[in-house]
Amino acid sequence: MKYYGTDFSENHKELNRLLSAKDKIEEAKSLYLILHGQLHESRVYGSESNEFDALIQGLTQKMAAVMPTKKDVTILWSLWHITRIEDAVMNLLIAGEQQVFDRTWAERLKTDVTDTGNAMNDEEILSLSKEVPLNELLAYRAAVGERTREIVSALTQNDLKRKPSVREGERLLSEGVLLPCEDSVWLKDFWMGKTISGLLLMPGSREPLLHLNDCARLKTVIYNNKI
Image 1 (cartoon, rainbow, N blue to C red):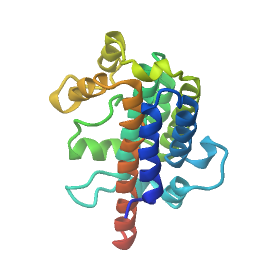
Image 2 (cartoon, rainbow, N blue to C red; image 1 turned 180 degrees about the horizontal axis):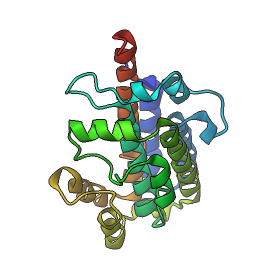
Image 3 (cartoon, rainbow, N blue to C red; image 1 turned 90 degrees about the horizontal axis):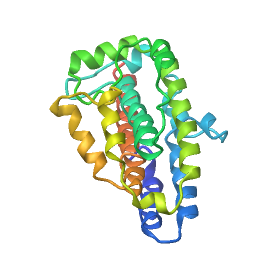
Image 4 (cartoon, rainbow, N blue to C red; image 1 turned 45 degrees about the vertical axis):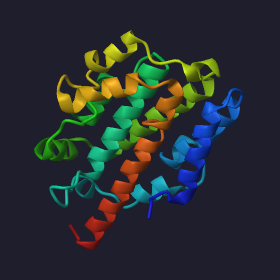
C-alpha cells in the first residue's frame, strides 16, 4: 500500500492534466500546493495534522539513522535527499534564485555535505545519518517547503513551458548540489531536459512521495524488529 494512498496518485494524474492545459494555471497551482502539503509537516501550511506528522511522530535520531539491511537506506538520508532536491530544483532551476541551504544551515545541520546524496555508499549514508540532527533537518525541510509555496504561487502560464537555462544548470555543480561523478551528475541532464511543468511533476511531487513511502516502511521495520 502506498504511504499516501490512492488519492495522491489520482490527484497527481489530474495535476499532470492541468499543467498540460492552456488556461488552467491557477487550478494547477492550487492542486500542486495541496499535494505539496501532504509531503511536509502540517506547520508548513498551518493545517491540521497530516501523514507526514504521523511519519515523524516518535521518530528518534537513532531510529532515523538505522539501515536495517544493505538493500536499504536510512530515514534521515531519505529526508535529506528529497529536501536537498526540492531546495535545488525549486530555487535554482525554477525560480533562478538562491537556495535555502547556505552557510548558516550547513552549520545547523553539522555537516560538510552539500549534495543530494545520490552517489553515497552505505558508509557515507550512515555517517550523514549520525551527524545531521534530525530536528534541524526537519526545520530545514520546513523552510524549503515554505519557500516552495512562494515560488509556485508566483508561477505564470508562460513559465510552465520554459526549460531551465544553461547558467541555472551549471549552478547545480558549482553550488555542490550534484557531484562531478556518474552517479550524481546524470541528474543535471535529466532535470535540464524538462520544462517547469515536468519539474513540478518529477521530482517536484512524485519523487518525495516515493521516498516517504520508503520511510514509512523503514519505520515499521525498525519498530517491529525493535532495532
